[in-house]
Length: 364
Image 1 (tube, rainbow, N blue to C red):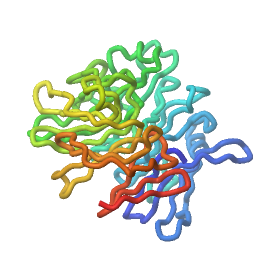
Image 2 (cartoon, rainbow, N blue to C red):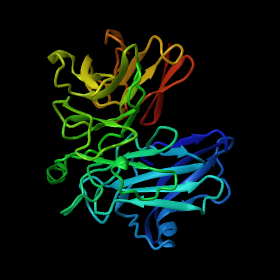
Image 3 (cartoon, rainbow, N blue to C red):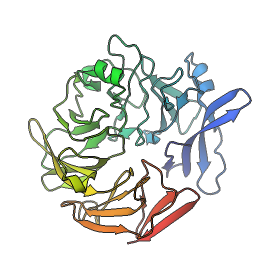
Image 4 (spheres, rainbow, N blue to C red):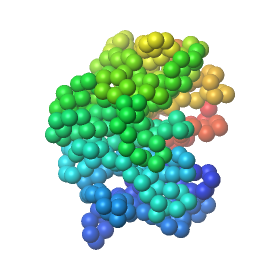
């Protein structure tokens, strides 16, 4: 399992995708396990390749990889697929939707061109009405065919060619050629304090941030604002939290406008307007590639950004959300077994970190 599972309180189950080696080769099985005792729910698991083959669709389980976090919307489970490291084999960007109440009821969406994997660790985003995915580079596409894009999908996953339902940079073909995926980071819906257009933020391996109108993604070249914000490719899971006059977005990146010693964690400030403004708010000194989370005291006050220096300093870092002031660095000894893209889990009074063969707990 490389994609983050999702829990549904109404069915009291945890849903996950597992790549399983069987007699006929690798398979992707989607499981629903009871939260009470871990037993599979009736009708599960679902073999994705078999289910799609019954609908006349080709899904090569050997070549498809499932890395992005799963999502639930409107009574359905959604699982996104891309390829393996090295862009090998016959894969496409796939989204598979499975009904929670009738798991044999399956829908899907796939990129028209080969490639175009949906592999961002944050997986599928939702604003409560639609799903949003970011796709990677396609292979041999002479005309745009769903790669290097942010795609809005309805719960039934029907294909839409309306420009309101997709965005791709105007240089998508050059990004394809450079393997500079837009799909390395999940699209992030933003609610910007002070009103204005509902937004979505896309972050690319091209080091750029794109602000989009969430109700009208704009088609090719249809962004509201664009800015080079990082010195290196952006591959992470970002987090947003409110500001008095906009929104903050924190992400693991080597910020272009950061003071040299304070790189590793980049925080952007998004302000409403026509067009909306996007600036670097502050940077934190973190050596490693964890993905941040935010805690607050009441949903918006006293924000603290937490991030792990995974595969770097292997320590926990905490920063004041509005100013970037360092609040915590530690423990003095590095944690063992952290992995890149890793996030923490926050409960009422503790932070938990899962590592290879162990779990660390920090009390607030």
